[in-house]
Image (cartoon, rainbow, N blue to C red; front, side, top):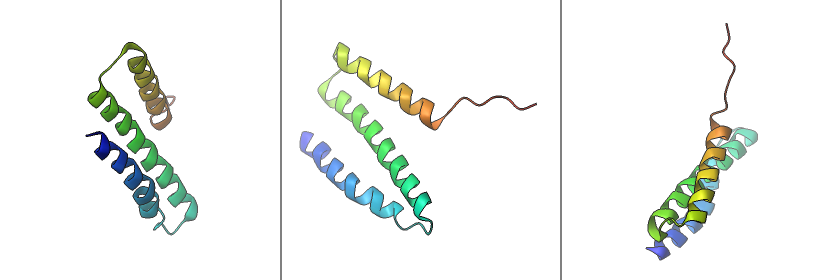
Length: 81
């Protein structure tokens, strides 16, 4: 199982930016690549915790990373009236 996690990182580092590079706009492609790789590594962290178990320190880091990712991708917006 650990080999599959390592192999998935290598594939993701190559495949996700290559897929995003097909965009006509370079800035949009770069943004897509950053978002896809960030989402992949968030799921990768969840997978590692699932495989290797949750110790107290690892669980705290996991919760912190999930909170930061959530705040970045879903910012709180003021209600418009």
